[in-house]
Length: 291
Image 1 (cartoon, rainbow, N blue to C red):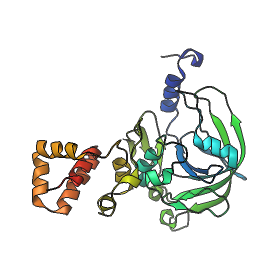
Image 2 (cartoon, rainbow, N blue to C red; image 1 turned 180 degrees about the horizontal axis):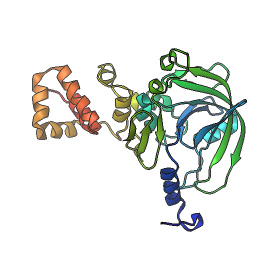
Image 3 (cartoon, helix red, strand yellow; image 1 turned 30 degrees about the vertical axis):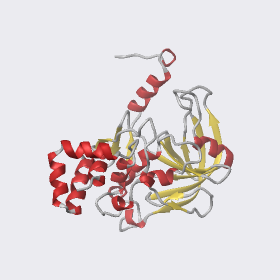
Image 4 (tube, one colour; image 1 turned 90 degrees about the vertical axis):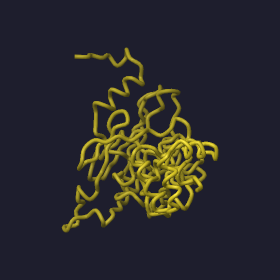
């Protein structure tokens, strides 16, 4: 058996062991505002419910291991003392993952990930309209667990209002665990889908994904791509150039055949196939290619 003294290994390696061993973990999709009212949206898997009376949720935005910086969510929580925690189901997991990209301060992750901002009733941060359950919270206390990279910050939140989509309720008015279709975080790129098992989500680029807001409307309005597909399409570093598209078409017989058919449905069907097979950049090239 491998025995480890936490003080004798690098924090990043220790974090990997912890996240892989203590799983699956529910996801707090935290919406906050900075002091100037700019929205921020980010997921955290150090999260759970700890009390029903009063209703208390706790999540922990840790200091970054690589450079010991703090996250915008923590800074906003300290400033405003309000947060909306949205739960994450399978329909939104790719967009949620894209939102974890480290965009500069002031960039709206709702726009980048393609989510809808829904006004809250009792707090100022917005709710994620696509989330099946949303908790409006007042922050009671923030406890720093250390001052080095990897140290957590326990954010203790009291739920002041809860919103539940009627689409996930059963005949008795309770949440149907099959309908809510929750996902949870595991180690590395792995997630768990409550009613089906494990699946993998490619981590967002270490560079910046262009975001769902940069996807052309004719992609979005085609009816072929769901939210998860849009999350994948938004997680590319750059839109393909005309030269890259020309090379792609020249080197792929099947693409030439699709383009020669001059049928947009055929084109979108093939692009959807590319997205499903982890080839989002090829979907972009196909859809932007001209006959």
